[in-house]
Amino acid sequence: NIPFTSVTPKTQVYLEGSSYFMEISNGTIILEEGVADKPDISISTTYKEIIKMAEDENYAQESISLEKTEVELLASNFVIFSKGYLTLYNELEGSFTGYTIIRI
Image 1 (cartoon, rainbow, N blue to C red):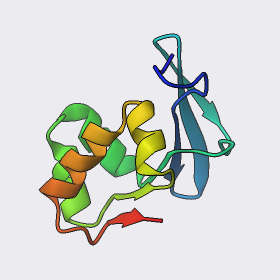
Image 2 (cartoon, one colour):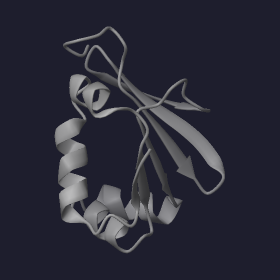
Image 3 (tube, rainbow, N blue to C red):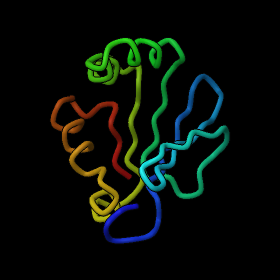
């Protein structure tokens, strides 16, 4: 689990009207259909984009920059840092124009 809290990292994923969430617990990624309780990050995209990302690990950056995928930060920087997301978010934020990465 994460270093500063017992709360597990959660990511909400929206794919063409379907909702899924990923949770990391004890080093295992759990993927379930539905809506997460207090997700840290939200990702919205299409099945086609997910397949392209699975086939090419570098495609995610292109998908975001082309606004085919949207990444939304829902938690505070401290929560994101404590759960290990801050480096990933900063890489995304630094790599793209910011038009598809939303900070609430």
